[in-house]
Amino acid sequence: MGMFQLAWLQEQADAPAGNRTAQPSGPVADAHFAPGPLLIAYASQTGVAEDLAEATYEQLRAAGITAQVVDFEALDRPLLEATGQALFLASTTYDGDPPDMAGTFSDEAMAQPAALAQLRYGLLALGDRGYGDFCAFGRALDAWLQAGGAQAWFPRIEVDDEDAQALQRWHAQLAALAAPPAPRGADALPSKVST
Image (cartoon, rainbow, N blue to C red; front, side):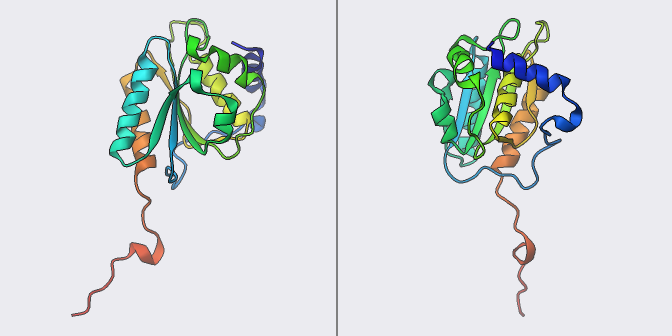
């Protein structure tokens, strides 16, 4: 893992709570996917994150959301800096390393913060607690996105060895973001019918 990620994670771990970027405790109120395309990017070593990215794509397609799936080999800073909304599915390999397909992205794109204030995102971090640095790449990616000004729709979801409950939380968050906004004010009241 690149020096930026390790240094950033150490700063986050050592910083007083008031100095850290606050993560929302649940879904952002009234948050929904914006009209337009959604980027789904995955970093997979064994194929699990890729399969979950495809399942995510199918879930969103069924909800009428336009999305594009790319792997981290196709991901770079200019693409992210031009993207308004994205979902990331990021595996961690061995002792905290990114998957092979994300090595270049980790070493080059994540070497310093990017201009990502326009980006809204969700992140599924995949790992195995049997290794020393559980979900380290997903955590480093989350910290890097926040350092660039990106805003999370919901707190990072960490999955320990394909934990079904964590995956259910992921799909529930996506369903909430894909749901049409509830009507407000006078629009929410049924109109009266005269008799």
